[in-house]
Length: 588
Image (cartoon, rainbow, N blue to C red; front, side):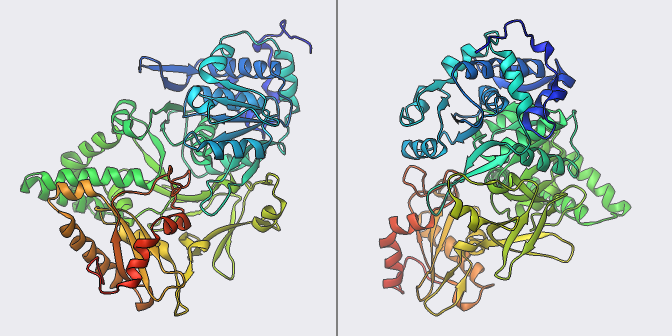
C-alpha cells in the first residue's frame, strides 16, 4: 500500500466528503472552527484538558491512518468497548473515516454478551479502554486483534499519519447510504439485536432536531450518559458537532453535582433517575430546614409554578416571581446546575409530572422526549416553544408518527435504521413499509403531542380476562420518595401484586423501621389503588431487601427491568403473595 508521507492534513478538502455523512460534518466543522475548544476531558491528574477542533481532526486522522496499517477495510466492523473518554471519540470518527463501521459495546456488559456482539457483528478488530475491558473479549473467528486506548491508541494519536492519502481517498468514497454504526439494543426480552444506522440517518435526524432546538456555538454541555447508547452519542456528541458548541466529558454520575458547579453547562442530556435524585436531595434539605425557611421555599416554589402556568402573568405575579427568584430560585439553580443551564433534555424513561413541574418552576425547563435505537435516537420532543406536561412532545421535522389499531406507536423517520444486522426476520417484524413498529403504546392528542402509556410486551392479562398495563402502576408507586423501584405482577393470576424495592437508607434517616416503612408503602399503594379499577388494583406487595442488578441479569444494559428474570428470581416471594392472601406483608 502506498505510504502518503508527502501529504499534509492541511491539504484536506472537506468539501470533497459527502455532506450527509458523519465524517463530512465533522471535517467541515473542524475546518470552520480550527483552534476553538471542542472537548474538555480529565487528564491523569484529574485536571481539565482541552482538545480543539484542530486537535480532534489531527488525532482522528492519526488513528485512522493506524487503522489502515492494521488492515481495516471499508465495511469492516470494529468494536469499541470503553467508558466515556476523548479517545472514544477519536476512534469512532477514525473508524467511520475509513468507511468502516463502529460497533459500541457497553463497558458494563458481561463477557459473554460482549463476545456475542463482537461475533454477531463480524468485528475484525476491537478497541478497549484498558486491560480490564479488553479481557471481556477473546480472539476468535474474524476478531484477530484487541487494541487498547491506553496503549496503542495513545501511541497512534501522537504519530504522524503514514497513510494520510489513503485515509483521504477513503473519506471521499464514504456515501450517505453507507452504514456507519451497528448499535445493539439493550434487550429486556432476549438476545440483543444490532440496528444498522446509515450516515444519512444520523445527519438528517440531527439537523431536523436543530430546527426546533435553539443551540449555538455559545452553548456547552456536560456529557455523562454512555456513548455506547444512541442518546448521548447522537443527541449529545454529534449534535454538538453540528452546532459547534463545547463538551465537557464527565467522570460519571457520582461526580455530577461537583462538575455541574464547576463546568456550568448551558444544556444537558440526562435521564429521569438523575432528576429524581436531584429533586429528592433538595426536598430532604428542605425537610431539615427551620420552619420559616420551609415556608419561604414553599411560597417561592408555588409562585414559580403559577408563573409557568400563566401565558401572560400579571404585574403582581411578575413582581412576586422576581422576588422569589432573587431569594430562593436563583440560588437553588446555582447550587443544582451551576446557574447557566437553559434546559435539560430528558429521555430513556417516563418522567413524573411533579419532577418536571419542579424544575420548570425553579427556572430550569426539562424537555421530555422519546425515541429508540432503531430511529437513531430522537423521534419526538417537547421544546421551549412547544411544551406540554406528561407528554414526550411532537415529532421532529420530517418525522411522522401514527397509532396502530392496537395502540402501538409507529414511526417513519429520516433516522430509521437500515435493518437489524444478520436478522432479516426481526427486521421484517420491526420495519414494515417504511414504518418502525416501536413496541410502545401511546396516544396522540388533538394538538399533536404524543403520550406514552406502556410497552406493548409489558401488557398482561389476569386470570379473569382483564388486561393490565403495569408501567403506569409502577410509575405511580415510584413517585414516592421512599420507593426506588417497583415491578407489578399478574399475568394469568387472579389479582395484581407488586415487588417493591424501598430506599432503605432514606427510610432509616426518617426514623422508619421495617414495620414503619411497610405502613408507609401501604398508604402509597392505597392512594394508587383509589384511582384504579378493581381488576388492576394492587392487592399485595413484598418489600425486597436490595435493588435489582445487572450482575444478576435483572437489569438490561440501559438499566431497564428484565421482568421475566426478576419474576424467576423472586418466584417464592411472588407465590407467597398468591398463596397467603391475608398475609401481613401488606394488603390493599
